[in-house]
Length: 240
Image 1 (spheres, one colour):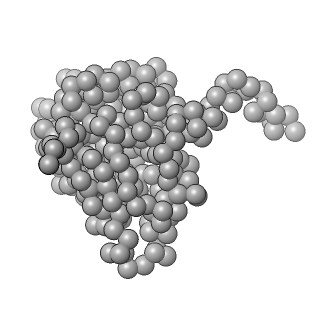
Image 2 (cartoon, rainbow, N blue to C red):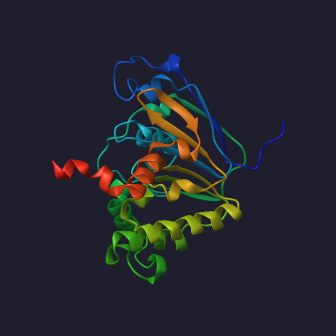
């Protein structure tokens, strides 16, 4: 058997191991329709409305790869609040080669991860400054620049949360450099900038389930394009 030079190949959802399909997250349309998803060797994106389940699925992928549910590297083992689902227990993930490093980033618990980084090694401030002494956006860029390396598996949940448009573009440049150095990314995002990487696969999560779409077919792109092209028209409700 030829093993592809990527870390995650595909996942399969084991429907037969779930006791109740009526409970969250198994009641979500994207989980009900989930059978198999292929990972792109460079970037796999998940997009969709709030509540669609994309972050829940991303978390399960991270946990199934032995990352801490709240984020960090595989060496992190803190637990501020046990709130992750059991979805990871029902995923079977086919893997290729093993990554040399990796990180699970989720915007909602980044403060807790930054605290744990300092607890583990007070001197290991990324970029020479404590992550807590930088803005949220600056600390994420410091993490991306100084902690993320080549041949790594990086799972990012809404990394754009603290980034300006210019910083999002800078982050995409850095992601490209890491991909060129053998890294693989799985990203859930609302950002049309981060979503624009051309050599990738995009899965749109909606009430109809989960399906692969082109960049231009995503609601993220379509809404932003409509707003930029016709802002006054999109804001006509304010004139009522």
